[in-house]
Length: 194
Image (cartoon, rainbow, N blue to C red):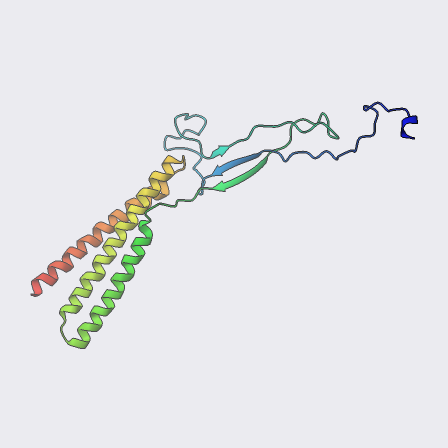
C-alpha cells in the first residue's frame, strides 16, 4: 500500500522545529581596586594627562559575539555581563599574623613573669617580664611595618594608590624607633641593677 503513494520531496517534508536559544553573552571581568584611587597625582595631572601612570583598574574583556539569527534578527550584538572583582592583598608570608602571635606571647610572658616574681620573691622575673613586654611591642611594630611595605609594593604593582600604606609604613617605623629606644633603656636599666 505504501508503494501506491507518491514519494514526497525531502525539502517539503515537515521537519520538527526546535526553539532557538541564544547563547549567553560573553562575560567581561573588571578587577577593581579595593581602595578608590585619587583623581589626581602628586603633580596635579589627571590619569588621561599622565600616560606613564598605570590604569586605576585592571579588566579582562571578551569579544562581542553576534546573536543567533532568529526571532531577534537584525538586533546587533548581545550585551555583555560585567562582574567586578575587588582586589585584596593576601601575602604569602603574612607579617601581621606573625605580629599578633608575638604580641600574645609577649603579653602572656609578661603576666607570667610578674606572677612568678610575686610567688618566688625573686624580682628578676619582674624585670625580665618588663623587657619581654617592651621587646614584643617593638617586634610587633616592625613586623607590622614589614606588612605595610609589602602591601605598598603590591598596590603599586597593581596600579593602585599606595599613599595610605606608605603613610602607615612611615608612622610604624617612627613608632618602632621610639619603642626600640625604650627597649634599650629597659635593657640598660635591668643591666645596671645587677
